[in-house]
Image (cartoon, rainbow, N blue to C red; front, side, top):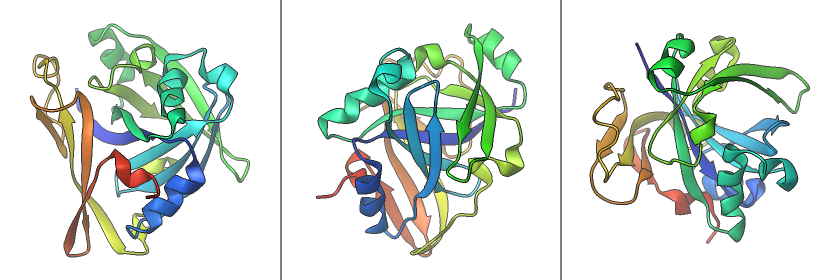
Length: 212
């Protein structure tokens, strides 16, 4: 089964503040929209074939009723945090069967009023920062990974995403995925995102998504 890195999820208490913090690094966050069934909303940082999803709580009552929303609620204490990562496939039923999880249809209403649709496996384990969720877009050409990665700082490309797996749970079943580096030290889950911005390297830890 072919898998590709689709996006990294960062939960923040305030989308406007996170967008302003990213602008200081020369990065542009574009409006995403609301996940009505999850109680969350987002902005997106395109990376050319992948992206960063910066997400916050839109409806606390709905968010408290699902694992994804509860993971985002944890950032309301004012501290941004990486809550997960997502890999892309065009055979999501096979992935769900292999990893013993269900497939859920989801959609997001964009600020322009259009709708983006996808299916996702692993939402029931969204509280696990190490194990990735799996996504299949209805129309990849119109989905966030296909957004142009043009930013105020110049052309941005993804170098790698560093993921901590101190319990070594991924090595037994996760195939190689380009741009994903799994290590056995440090905190579990996404630790940092490393980008190439023109001729320089930019390393983003969770605190890069908040104003000083």
